Amino acid sequence: MIAVVIGIVLVVTVKPGKWMDTNIEDLVGGAKSAPCISNAIDTIFDLVKGLFPENLIEATFRSEKVCMKFINGSEPIDSDVALKMSPEQRSQYQEIPEVVRSDGMNILGLVMFSVSLGIVIARIGDEGAPLKAFFKSLEAVSMRLISLVIWFSPVGITFLIAAQIVGMKDPGKELQRLMGYMVCVLAGLSIHGLIVLPTLMIILARRNPVKYVYGMAQALLTALATSSSSATLPLSIKCVEENNGVDPRVARFVLPLGATINMDGTALYEAVAAIYISQCVGQDLSIGNIILVSLTATLASIGAAGIPQAGIVTMIMVLIAIGLPSNLFILIFPVDFFLDRIRTTVNVYGDSIGAAVVGKMCERYLPRDTVEATESGYRMLTQTASPDPSKRHNHYENHQL
Image 1: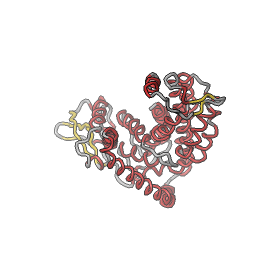
Image 2 (image 1 turned 180 degrees about the horizontal axis):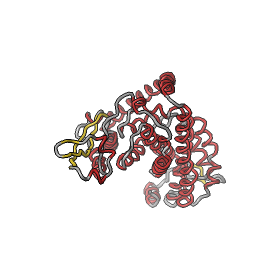
Image 3 (image 1 turned 135 degrees about the horizontal axis):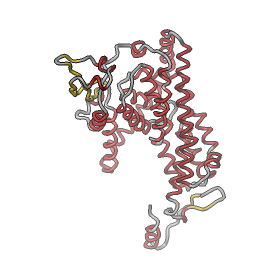
Image 4 (image 1 turned 30 degrees about the horizontal axis):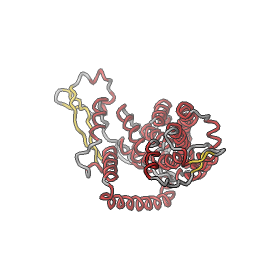
């Protein structure tokens, strides 16, 4: 969430999407939908209500929100006209809240249901094993299909980008705008990776971040080269344990978990990309929509796979959540190949920082007779059973987490 806030502050302040005039019809391939005017309270209530959809099937293709309708006597005022009015001018007309259903998935509701279902399946144990196996198989099949699509995507995306280039009035300004987006993402990742994470390391783990990064150099370079946190995982575990002396029990628990759910670099990128695209097409986001972007980007990054350019797939969820067409990802795709490597490096670095922090906090609770101290850290020992089971039970009873 810290990374998301950093990215949002940068892109809202710099506004790289406003650096050139863009015709929205050329980008979305259709007419612009009517804008929704709402206050902050209604937007927050919409977020809470969206977490619990009335119809799960409908949530896959439709969402609803409360918009304010302005009435002048008996005649309604057009939304585009009302949007250009100041709050003082709008106060002269009668405001009527109206529930508006729009096309697009209710992302938060689907994520909430999926998380709840996963927790229940895990809690019921063996009874939920068939359903768990089904979803694992479904995930494997889906990832294989997505991999095939990604494999052939350069051809289709080349034509999509070519169509946009042909329609550009000034490609130089378009390149300038894209460079502004890159600067925002790189600045956000730099602030998070060079300031926020080292500060957390100093405060929570009481360690020198410079020496720690030096010990992680091999893993970070691998992440930069492969653009995959999953492929870097074995090397990350080795660097954290052998070079930085983190307890193996902590490293082998935190790092695989972090490679799956701790995608702080990806979350920052998705938040910046979504707001940047909305700026490009002339859609100004309200405070409520920005909050929605932060929540959706955080949740979507948790579900991102640790494979190259997986952030593009989850970023589409963020675009749909704020009412933008999913095909607008082509606006940032030309530079995603480079940015993907940087954000993956930040993801791996953040996971290693998490391992150091957890290791420091759990240090006094972990039994030492299962590890051996070495010059570089700790080495796992093979545990031998005690001849007296009662003593073995009492011994570990005092060292439980």
